Image (cartoon, rainbow over all chains, first blue to last red; front, top):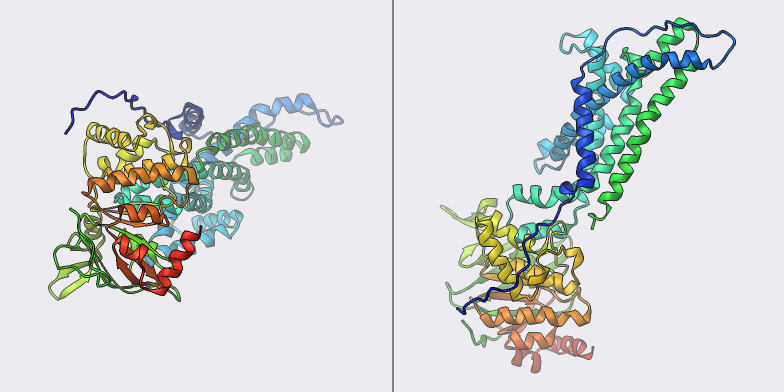
Length: 278
Length: 271
């Protein structure tokens, strides 16, 4: 054993993984805080009504439209909150579905495939109506309109998320799995240290897109199960004032207000994570 | 420990001495039979170079030992322990995952395409298994990792990620990573084949250093015949899933007995 000279060694600096980088972490924390604020604010109740009469011959009547904005925002809040809650279910349930589908036990994987494919290939409209029928016709489930929307969105988008996870996991090249075996890593270490850190950058943009798609699906519930969201707001105002143009214009604005920044965030995230894909 | 490797083509050494012992191993992918009734013994500390035409099943031997593929039949022992079987009351029975993991900890492998973890630095790649599998402290593993990086001449690249390294540097990190768990048997699967020609030398130098230390049993699949003749105790010529002939580099590379070996070596040395 020769005496080891104090060699000039560089200081140990762990590689900054994507989930430790501020440009990825800060938006994700902001989104999480936004989610919790929405959820924490609780449900809003109360009906929509206009307290202002529009000019009969002016379309659109801008003053009337501005007057409706607070109520539109209330509808937007209801829709956004239900979407966020439903999507939280989807992200967790989707992961479990992806794991079940990958299972080596056929008793687990075959039903998982059947359920995922069944839910994914039937319209969410039908699923919401079915949930409502279950609520009305049986004592097994008893859900309010918003709850139907949350559960419906959650289960429907869970199947999409599970496909997103699956694609992300499959994008981790074979050599990485083999290296994990060659180093004799336990399944837990293999998944948490090797597979998931590489799969997530390929999954996050897809999940973001599903969130936006889910948000755009949410008004279906306003129409069929009576959730007092954006579309319900517009329908109510139209029925009371016989003025369809202003409220429907406003819902368009409401959706753009959320969808555009969200889409921009997802694209940005996609770019920021791009170099992690090797 | 050096063996003279003069056992010719019989390829059977006395029981108890083998680092790797394969008996009657068959492997097919669909209709494509890759290994037929393969018997192969490697003694501890021996350096065996496996040569042969592509598609002859050389790489499959290493992959079976590393448990990346499962054999269709036959037995494989590593360090005297069955890899895929356990001793039961009624003879051998197929082993569970736990048993395979136990035996596998004696084996290390270096891949043609490096397979470094791209989201970790060189040093983190090397430290992962010692810390997470072998229960070393982070400080201990870091110290050992830096020693290994110095050994492969990359101490100043400890914090670089694989994306920032050249092919030769990646492969040297991959070798250091495999060495970090101190396996008794090291498998090298065409480790220079994916490299630019000018980078091959630096990787072979590292392999030479490991061979000179002589503590590790090495099985190498390679097309570098010069390197093979230099480090190998024994060269095994492989064709159609079977050992065609085997012997010391001098015997096999300079004076092959089989016509197919002559043809193969002729084709390789032409280039």
